[in-house]
Image 1 (cartoon, rainbow, N blue to C red):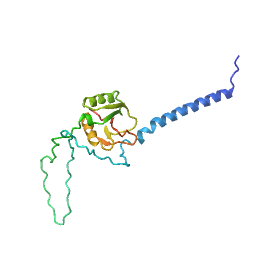
Image 2: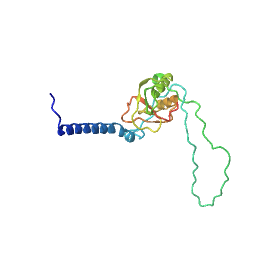
Image 3: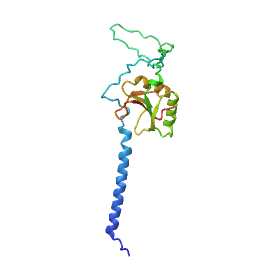
Image 4: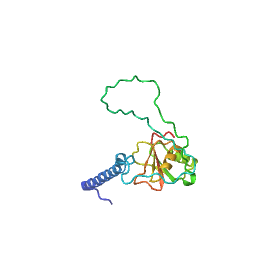
Amino acid sequence: MSRPKGDKGQVLSSLVAVVAVVAIVGGLLVLFGTRGHESSADEPKTTSTPKPSAKPSGGPSTIIASVPPRKPTTAPTSAPTTTVPPTTEPPVTQPPATHPTTIPTAERPAAEVYNNTPRKGLADQVAGRARQAGWTVSGVDNWHGKVVESTVYYPPGMVQAANQLARDLGVGRTKPALDNMKMDRLTVILTSDYTG
């Protein structure tokens, strides 16, 4: 025989259900809501300054320098100035380096590849491309947080390796590694701008 529930039993079970739903929603907000705006992936570290590797490379250089066009500067003068009509000549740019640096495969650090897009399988695809280029990929996963542009993050002493990996993968930006990243490898975070 079961006894009928009174109003107290219904109110108590309803209250427990409401508290459970509120706890779940609160937990989800904490888990997903704070990651989008509080990620420090695009803020530079202020604790240390990365330094280029002191090791000379054994092969020819493959780093291509990207130099923005120089802005003309004018010094103030007391003499009157005359206006020069604009010319149709293209702006002067520096030619790319003819001997970029190539880091030998045996000297390359490991890399981890993270997908920060809704595109499924992107990290695996790019990790395969890195392996074909001679890199050791030590991990592939999704990145949770907000990163504005695909980036290769590097720990101190691995700037040249980061530049080469960025070139090999078609990533346009390198930055110093963040505190939450491993300091013995490169970290690649792919965003929706990645076209590979």
